[in-house]
Amino acid sequence: MAPVALVGSITLLFPLIFRASTWACLFCFTTHEERLRLCQLFVGTEGPKLGQCKDALTAAFEGLSDVEINYDERGHLHDAFTQMTLALQEVAAAQGSFKAAFPIAAAKMKKTIQQLKKVQDCIPPCGVQEVSRRFYCWGCFSTVCDLPLDCPVQDLTVKRGDQALFSCVVGFQLPESELTYSWKFAGGGLRTQDVSYFRDVPGAHGYLARIRPVQPTHRGTFSCVILHDQRPLARLYFFLNVTGPPPPEETELQVTFREVIHWTPREAEMIEPWRPSLSELLARPQALTLGNLFLLAAVAALVSASVTVLVW
View 1 (tube, rainbow, N blue to C red):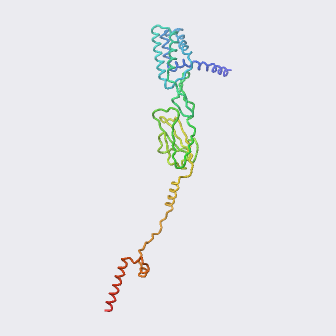
View 2 (cartoon, rainbow, N blue to C red):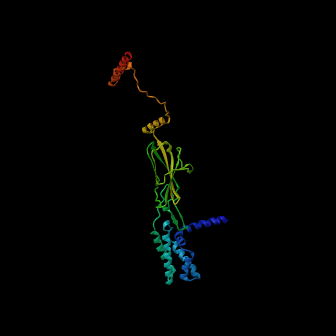
View 3 (cartoon, rainbow, N blue to C red):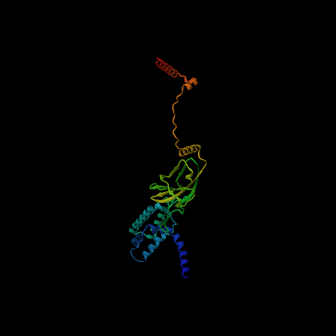
């Protein structure tokens, strides 16, 4: 019976918790000592009226609807409750009635909450979206969008030799400072989101990454992690598929490269000068140049002189 009674008590307690959200804002932004001190100023430090004052303070804020506020507006709301407490203390010092003062203060607080900056909606499909963080008064806690850190894989098809451009951009608002980008690559044609396959890409630090020219070795998944103060906000994936034959200029370059690789030095060829004989000179009219004619005349004169000397 005890477990059944406990379950029943919890079931009855849930509507009270969710119904009394705005008076829970009172508990989030004021302390027990501040509330007790306020009632003591109205009715004194002791007596049954002290309990009545505390019940009246709770009841005044109990009638407001559930409240969730922009997380960044917590400071403004805290200041508003501080000003409200000071104003109520002035009413108590003037011998005012808490029964009249508390509902008026709760109505003013409702208007103040309505004027706070609204929280932004969550933008799917992924990311830790701090601009959408909500603060719930009924539990004095905050939450962000229930979205995964990993974004879906985006497919990109590029022809071999062309350019591939990746943009690490998300649809929700990012912090203005202390943002860094980390790029990684899983090669071998893998289309994956398993971080164990990825390796760092050197030289890529901004939100844009470019590959030029694209080669078959670039086929695989690229990953970009957006970090704020070293804390990841989103992880994007890009699967690069490389298609098409290599361009003609690449083929010619490869042929030239192979020729250079397989080139072997040949034996040096000795180029000897042509020394024609007399019969070759007489057999080739084009060889009887003016210089050759002078040479023949000189040889004939030398032979004639030699014969003359020998006979003499």
